[in-house]
Image (cartoon, rainbow, N blue to C red; front, side, top):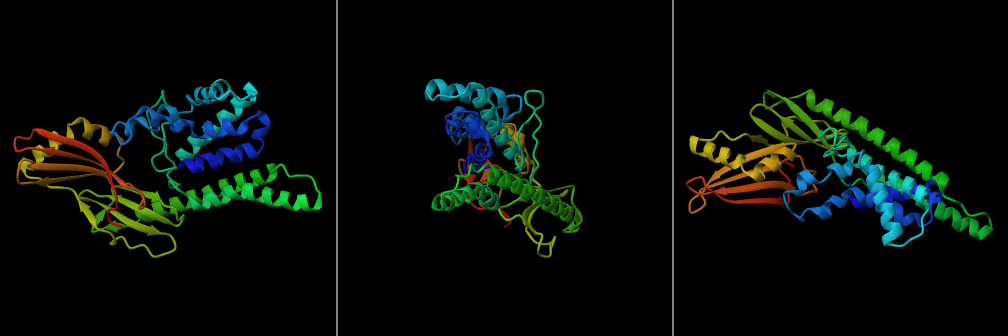
Length: 330
């Protein structure tokens, strides 16, 4: 999920009682809730290497205590803020684990069991940004603030905000239980249909900001398809444009094979959930352009792709990783 959500969840944990664990709790929880994404600092921005590196061991359960300890050490000895070491460690650990859990809810998921397993775990029920989740988290802060304003006027005791924070947490859990049920319904809808006369060999439902709307991904023997699944509207399996797999000539097939063996293609294919291949024959110095893009992308996000150019002798001219605006099929 986005950094704002991670930070808000961390602050909600502190509001629910975590702030009692240590002085300078805000420094600890804010840094801990964002710490797993520190892997971005160890890869060049925009580089293809970020794909296998991000949400790797820094997002694993086994590495969570190490990150939590690093946050405490950073706050205490670098920022020179007084903390109770044991309480600060517990709070930091809760912050790191909250980050891992939120990323587990998304389509891309995370490698929770590294270094024991390289498997990606993804519940696929949450979008990158979730306005409904924002509102429920905001309630945990708004209610005690309003309550304290009223109490100040009448001279009553100031509210700690613990109860409202726990109510907010319970509402958030209920929200994602609903998201899970809606996602299961969308997947069942996709599995029950025939697409352009073909049955699906694989389907997935990509969550969006609207809990009732999903990006349906369908894989068939001859094509892939992207179409909208809206649980409150009739679903038409004939909607959307089929993305047919290329049936290349001998020459184009050779270009595809050589491009597919490049380092860029291998890294991208190991990461991509729904790769789509294209090959174009050109005139001039560049004879072949091979692109591999991941069609499993939310409508408001850029599509990642690798573009590989070859000359007439099938020598690699360039390998470019980029993210492109727009969205296929919707």
